Length: 370
Image 1 (cartoon, helix red, strand yellow):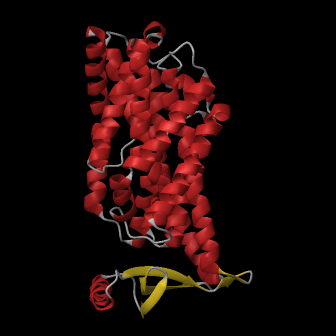
Image 2 (cartoon, one colour):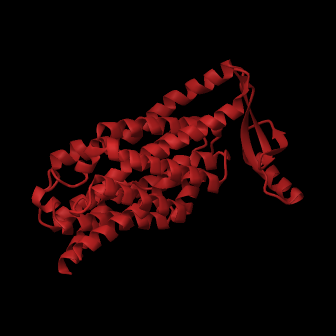
Image 3 (cartoon, one colour):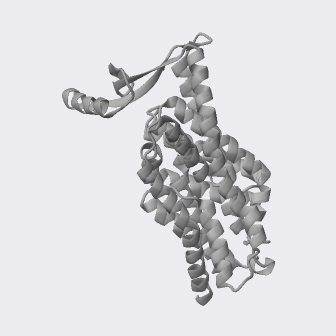
């Protein structure tokens, strides 16, 4: 019975993780108009699954960290009741956030559930390990993402201009240009887009495009390919970093090893993204900041480097926080950040861990009474 609860709880958590996190790697592709929602989601699903499978080889340290051993008593961490409560508490937290379209951290949810379930069981929490092994990388990584973006994006912009690649803003239907406008997408341009939409009978959008050649090749085409590659790197990194955190709970089932648990979690993450990613996708793509292809590439490039590096070192960073941090940085540099939405996201981040802890505790008490 308990084994079935653990399996159900972990699949629920993995599904919620896919629904809330899968699209984050490709949000810039959709938000910048590089591709449509379906194609972006397909790319996210494939590359995240590849990251999940690679986790079998490279992310053994994360498997051990998120088993709870060292954070709570080893005896408690080895019980199926504790594992099931952690998975259920974290899964319910992420599902609630997904329902309202808030991109939160599965890592924070898991850490909260590890603590809350431990408290409910009367276990002592190793706060030193909690601070150095969990909180430090989780707090530092988004700040590093913001700072890296603030430094790197202006450098890339100056380099583009030196290569003779210019940027223009156009009103377009799909990939077809209707008009060129002299400035970025401000209120006048948006109003004009609405007028043309009525006249043409199709949706006209304001897009930023690059003009010029690099090594004899169209710069816009090169950037689009690099943008897809960087989005795939972020999704791969997310699968690599998140899958072992969730799969660690399945190791409590004697018949499952690292390979089997990782495969189950990877499949559930993929399904969650395919079925339930739309609301968080819209928040990440359109409600944090306006962006063009180059800005989206920069955000993805920085996110992938930080998350892959952390995974290799066994550090539990949040892909959500790193990805959002990069977008916050882009919005700050371009002065197009939607600070109202950013404030809501930061608020959701603040309550993620205590919510995970509370639900973890409730789930532990509930399982113990069954």
